Length: 451
Image 1 (cartoon, rainbow, N blue to C red):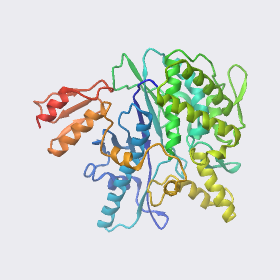
Image 2: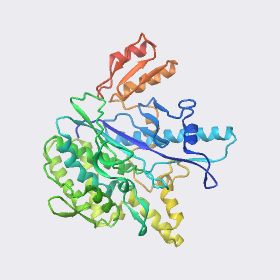
Image 3: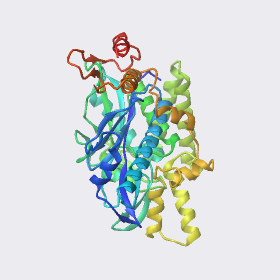
Image 4: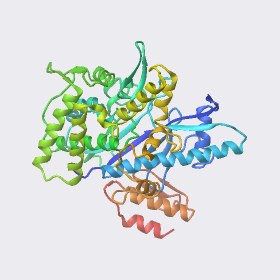
């Protein structure tokens, strides 16, 4: 797999309850959550010692953006580290609530919808070559993004005018366009935001907002890894098929609403095809590509995992009850319904759906499965704990993280962004770090030694 910069942004659902009722307004909960990060902050925006960014997004959603990673498994590890960092904020905030005489529990969910029908995102970022036109990327990727939910979807108990039923994806219902610049309205499959935080003549940033937040490490790994493999094929000129959909927005919803995977969608060439069959065709192209190159172990692993998942989906999707979020959750809910003789419309079923995404290890359903060795992993607890404090060592994030760590140790006032480091001293220069692949820089080392 080509060396590429990856990033993931996850927004978290946030509430504070007492005896099942909302206790504080979202802005007040957020204030308690971020008070330790920036005292009194309502619009917190900070970079951390692991190189990541933690901030409060629109709608008072805590958002964690991973540091720049050049390895898919490491990206998954840093995404999971974000859960633990946000959980730490939760515990600190609850302590301050008690000190202020306020009863209640703060809940954080790594999902994409709330009970009022609002949606918040999981954004993927890929550094891609400027040599390939955006239109070419979109043509090759949109059909892939529409159909990859069959293994990357988080699952959802959805209420519709026809009643309650189970669907594959939480975000699919909130996608309105193929391509747009908006992220909170007119949400699109591919976003046109192009801030590469790198040499803009050489690179663009592919900003993907269509995916679900994954609890499953394997699903997250496949979501990013398969996309990276398709990008490699497009950039190398090994992908020339046109799978353009007649109506991508309608297709993504129709596919999501059919967990049997039999729903077909229409291509612009007039052909009708299921999401599974279209994924099989993408996989066949990828298999030929990997055989034609000197593939590295990561590429081989992504292809093998993708092949195994597609084979299982083609025979019995429920075989993926350890790897794919929507399958894990569906098996769990159906067992709960059968045991308690419940229907899809029962509030307890929707509550179980939500609890799957609770990031507290002692409360979240996903973590109970993890503790019982009922789900497969990519990361380890030790690597996740390390990633809470240590940035990737092979990207620009190392420079940022080390600068922040040393500045904090020495009590220095500073400012950082994705591309610059600066001490708040008019006599000190701003150091621009425009190469996200560069993990060592003598200018930064010199600045740190001068503290």
